[in-house]
Length: 126
Image (cartoon, rainbow, N blue to C red; front, top):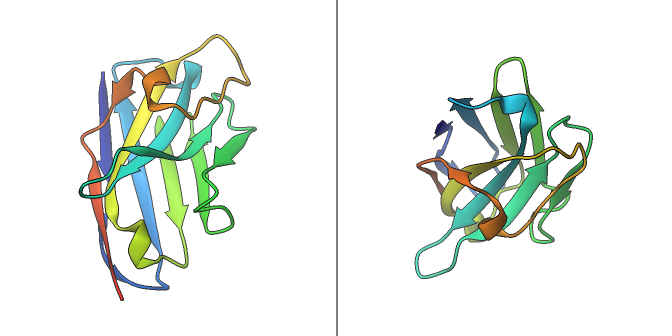
């Protein structure tokens, strides 16, 4: 299983980035997908998640209204559109996956995800 995250970079505060995570080696449409982030000295925390059918999503309070998660099951890719970025959003962003039999399973705990990508770094300048 491979999850290849991309799209990170340096952006000014108030700017936007779109992260992508391409999956291989698993049946993507059976996976709930999540994005997590980890800033230096902090634990890896939940950012957003999306059900296997893409019909439901949830977000950390810190990003609600600024971030949108989406997926394309045909392309086996999950996206994270981030707008109005703040310096506090700077972190390494990781995508995660878990195979599930439920259309509506939407975990927020990192221990509930079994597969992880390598991370893509987001830097926000003030």
